[in-house]
Length: 223
Image (cartoon, rainbow, N blue to C red; front, side):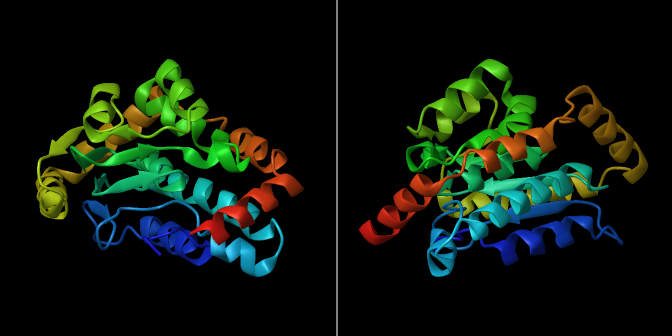
């Protein structure tokens, strides 16, 4: 499923980042050739309603907030692609690595799904102007362009080495004094606040309608 985000997976992410006992740094990677393809649309189709999508949106917001409020720094490694909800997870990271040919963006606009839920986190990382452009345009950008915008911090020339490089980065962070790093991380989060994330989530929830479900079903059947 290209690491598509189900409700259960998002709940697992929240629990993982809330667990701080002995953890000095965290790494989030995708298995296989793609970091994350976004929400698991088949989960919604199986239920025949928008309830799964609503739960996924709530779970996504919760996972990103868990990342941002975790007491340890988090490194995300992107290989292949980070789409929609997968791209949104980058907003919870302290450092993002990606292969230079990776594809990133928010194509869900075409399905009638508002990516507003990610707006506060994306704006905190790249600024309001670039965030607006990324959220309005369903076209994908390259890893190189994502680095130029600030969505990605470091580029890796070989997708197969993304995991290795991300782990090395996390290991380096873990070697630093925990208290100093923790205080610095908290302060950086304060100067890039995401206080309106709950309102952003509600905007995405309010935008859902019957047409959204129809578009999602057509997308699933076309695969």
